[in-house]
Image 1 (tube, rainbow, N blue to C red):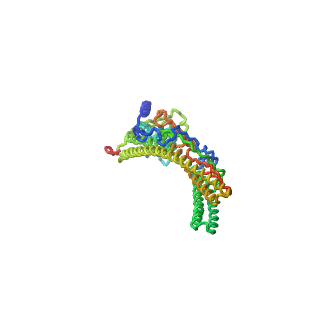
Image 2: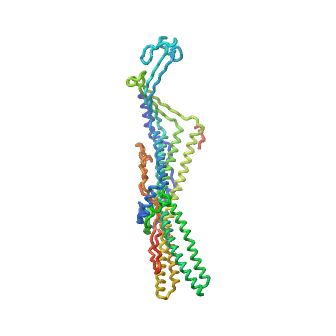
Image 3: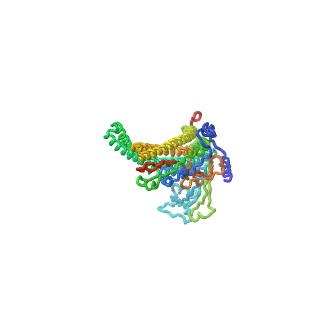
Length: 556
């Protein structure tokens, strides 16, 4: 027994270093990453921790908190992380022996002159056997003596498959990588959800502002139309001029329902992303929506930072590692399996005898099993795993290229959006000055009131266009943070893989546990601005803008 046990321990120790997983494949998109972004204005270290709070908008902060707590996509992603954690525990269980406990009670009652009783009678020399439980000799029943045997036993059984070729360890490490990928997938969902919520918020602020400005434009054009009618009746203008003013008023008036419809759709998106019904959205959006404008450059860091900063790149890398390890596990299935089994316990003819230590028994066994013919299934499993690894190599390279391209595009879009905003800000200032000038000319009697109304209409149109530019700048800033990976909020609940310990594997991607809690914060959002257009209208107030392959051996 001792020699069998020592052989088993020796094999277990030898198995610690065996693995058939291929070496990691070099990836050209990773090895050829540029040293810096072409479109970067500022190459400082990128840090985005709750960056949306810099808008100093309590409504936006409240919306983000609600989305992180109640969004159903995030709840679904958390459940997928829990599923991956459970699968990891299942894979880890293959590294441990299986231990079972058992207890049995049996009673055999046979006639002495037949079957098993006849055998016992022959052994005993034909005499009437006594009850095996220690009772008196069995009595004859209808001329036939009987043999009664009672048996009680309690045992613990152990079985263990020595992972000599690394199948279980590679499967376990692959499951660990899948768990890491699922955590990164959660962060991808989080970035997407927050991006949707914050972009919808700024779209709604912009639409509300444009609705207000368009209604003011309709009022101005209605007044302008009334004056044109009077002047037409006096023969001062032609019918074409009158119809032109009327068409402008009707066009502006017709755009109001369209803008309201768009605002309703954005509100529906906000309700969905915040996990609420539409009628519950008003309380969430209650208060002034007046975000600050942010036009400062965003430190872009280095392209290599995307390999750890962007969760989609980390998820792709983890799945690449998982597929590589699965190849090693499937190759190990082609080789013999070595198993150990043993049982130890107590056995007695009486129930009281189970407490007598001298009644112990044991069974130890070791076995080796080599697959000989399975119709090519095992070889096909290896080919499938290698094909999946090749797919993940291509997918990860594509992900890295996409990430760098999106970052470059986002940085360019943000700079161009700010340039457009600056131009429209200057245009808005000129429009304000024009309104003030025409108002002064009208009050001084040297200018026509229609000139003032025309200047006021231009100002309102300019402010509406500026609101659109502010929204675009905010969404462009959001795009930069999403492209650079942003920051993530923490994964709800404990995300460490429980019961995982593998001290022999410290630097091969299989730490004892996995810290599923992200190291950064949630990032996704937009920024907006409140342009400072002064209202010089001496007769009405329009309000400020606030936009916000098996060949040789197929038998296995």
